[in-house]
Amino acid sequence: MTHTANIFNPRERSVIALTTPRRNRLVELASQQKPAFGGSLHSGDISRARALADSTFDFVMVDLEHEGFDLPRLGDTLQWLISRRQMAKTGSLFPSPTPIVRLPHTLGERTMWIASQALDYGALGLILPYTEHAEDVEMMVRALRYPRREANGGVVGERRVWPKLASRYWGCADYDEYFDMADFWPLSEQGEIVLIAMVATPTALENIEEIASVPGLSGILFGAKHAWSALGRRGKTDLDDPDLVHFRSSVLAACQKNDIVAGTSLSGSAPVLGGGTVNVPYLERRIDEGFGFFLTQGNGRPELTR
Image (cartoon, rainbow, N blue to C red; front, top):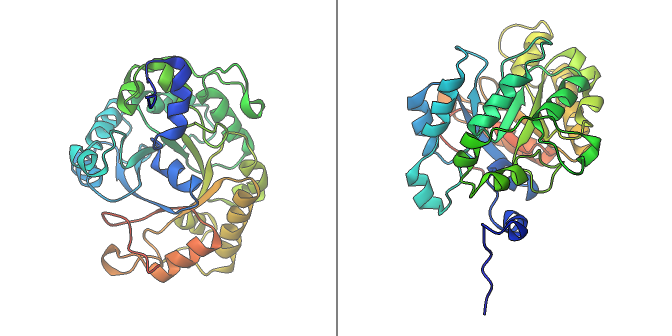
């Protein structure tokens, strides 16, 4: 007789977590060394949220940095990113595409409470814009991990307990199931939350090795347009500029050295042709180099030639 695992049995819950599909599509694809593609929207843009919920994107960046800051609207936006049509197509009850929240730039302020509330609403990932120092990431990891019996990577968590909304959004059977998975991947093998540092300044480039080595960091997003501006350049971003190529290569090397995923944007510059169409040859070169996730325009995953 075949034994069926019982999700209400705590002894069997961890087995289920490692044998069922991942809740976080970016984690799932990164674990398989496959590229992930995401769109973006401003928090509160319900029409865009509905469109992206039915798209073929793997993840969606919900922008909490620009065009206003409102946490309850973030909660509403996350709900509109759930599509029963997608559930019927995929056979999965998990949020798809995976919602990842871009936090406001803190300018050195210690605003971990914003990140904590984004997770409490159900986000499966966070983007830290304009990260420049390893300490910025270290404090976020510590503030956003739940206390554990064993501190993976020497990181002791301090996140406070209020899983009511997030556990429901994730489709967890109970709070304990959420606690088991609400950790940073790849620091925790069964973690379903990604923490991504966006880098774009000369200071970040100087510290890229230290940033990438912080336990709990999942990946680094190279902000090409922002880096172009931070270098004092104007006009259309030249992605073949030697300074940008060096920055991009340094990000990739640091990520590969520390076994985390590297990403970049394909929006608003050379990778995007007229009408928001992705420049596929450019994209495939970045994939061949080792980049693992991409932010792009349009309404779904780009069609690759291979």
